[in-house]
Image (cartoon, rainbow, N blue to C red):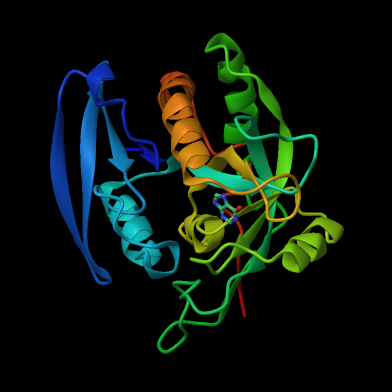
Length: 255
Ligand code: HPA
């Protein structure tokens, strides 16, 4: 199995059947769904757990990504709910995440822990796979999704939202959208040599930008978008994929 979708649920009816699989990893067991799409098995992983019960700072990111690697996954599309601190990107909009700024504080962010292994560093010139990102723009058009543009993602530790002054700082650093989960997911994918692209679903204005954050907005925006985005991911997966035109499988520097 080579392809996976993280975050997006609600497309099970597209496939010809699905089953749940538990993958045992050295970081713990991970439950995911395998869906048969036109004869090919694709893995669906609900990042927060199937009942959305794991908060962002406690997600077993290493377990999740290791489980995908053990299944043979090389290509991943992920969705991320984000707030916007860029006036050009409004709630309900879809953006492609092109880079990140990491403000997480206390989660394990790497598989590279030294010991018997050499010291390894990861090249972050292209944190997100350009190939998969470009493909998303193409398939989004076919699915009628209006992608508003590229976005720099600021990752906070959460689970609290940000203060108005934190948002002013993130904005002044070049951040467009703010979320709590893309770090370390994108980093771990790179460490495992996988192609990883992420699509941001803007659920709210960040604190102090315009109006208040409401839960109603967040849930409404997510359910309105998740199905069409997942369909676009599957359309992108239906085409030919390789790692010849990206650095994703070649970004580990050993010292
Ligand atoms: N901040 C952080 N994470 C988020 C937000 C936000 O405003 N909206 C959705 N996830």
